Length: 328
Ligand code: ADP
Ligand code: F6P
Image 1 (cartoon, rainbow, N blue to C red):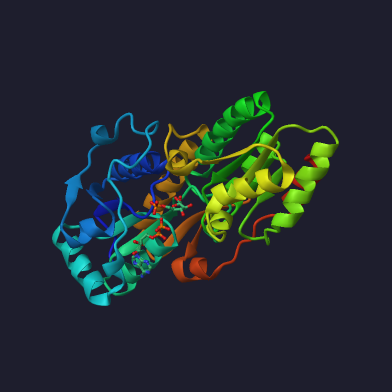
Image 2: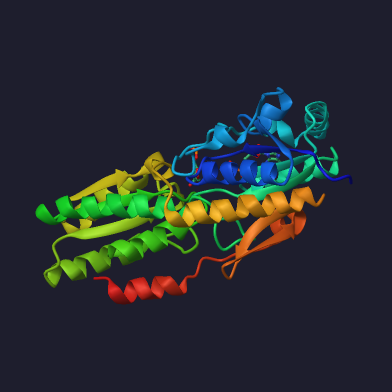
C-alpha cells in the first residue's frame, strides 16, 4: 500500500479523558511529518456521512487538558455491515484520507480492521476507555483520570458516612471489568470490593460487616463494580437495603455513573495519550496499517489488530488478597 498523505482521526464508543490529548498528538505529529489531517466527527458515523473537518496546528491548541472529545463520539452498529465499510472507504478516498487513527475500544478496533482489509484504508487503533478492559494493553487512555475521580468521590462519601455511622455502597463503572473497582477500593480503603471477575457472595459480605460491627467498626465503604450490581435485581440500592436489613447498619447507595468519564485528564492520561498518538502517526506515515497501539511493561508497542483482539488479560486478583488483608 502506498504511503499516506492525509491522515484522518476519529473517536468511537464511550468517551474517555485523554482522547483530546491523543487527537492533538496525532494532528501535530502528522503535520510535523508533512501530512495533512482531517478529523472525522461522531466516530464511524462521520465516515458514512462525510462529516470531515480539516485540522491544523492551532485547531488543537490547549485541548490536552480538556475532556470529552472535540471530535464527538458515537456508537455505529451499521459499521458491522461490509457494504457500509466499503462505502465509508470510498468516502475516505474521496476526502483524500489514506490512513486513519481510530481511538476507542474493541468494537472500534473491529471496524478499523474491516476498513483496512475491506476498504484499503490503513487504520491504527488507540485504546481509549476508562475501564482498562482492552486485552492487548496494560493501560487504556482515560483509566487513571477515572480512578482518581472515583477515588475523590468515595473519599467524600466516607466523610459523611463516618459522621452518621453509616455504610456506603458505591457503584463504580465497569460493566465487564473490575479494574476501576479493585484499584479504587484499595485506594479508599474499602471494607469490601465486588468485581465482575469474581463471584459476589452477598452472605460473605454481610457476615464480614456483622463481625466488624460487633468489634466496634461503625462506618463502611463497599465498592461495587457496575457489572456486579447489574446482575442483582434492584442493583446497588438492593445491596444497600440488604446490608441495612441484615446487619442493622444504616446504609446508602451511590451510583457514581458518568461523572467518572469527565474531568481534566491526569498527567498519566495526557502523557500516554500523547505518546500513543505520536506512535500511531509513525506507523501510518510508514504505510503501516491494521495495527493497535498498546502499552506493555511501560513501553509503547503495536500489534496486528486480529492478534490484539484475540489476546486475553486478567484482573490481578492478587490485589483482592491485599484488599482482604488490609480491610475490616
Ligand atoms: P464501547 O465499548 O464504548 O461501545 P467500542 O469501541 O467497543 O466502544 O465500540 C464502538 C463502536 O464500534 C460500536 O458502536 C460498534 O458498533 C462499532 N463497530 C464498528 N465495527 C464493528 C465491528 N466489526 N464489530 C463490533 N463493533 C463495531
Ligand atoms: O466507558 C466505559 C463504560 O463506562 C462502561 O463501564 C459502561 O458500561 C459503559 O461505558 C456505559 O456507557 P454508555 O452509558 O455511554 O453506554
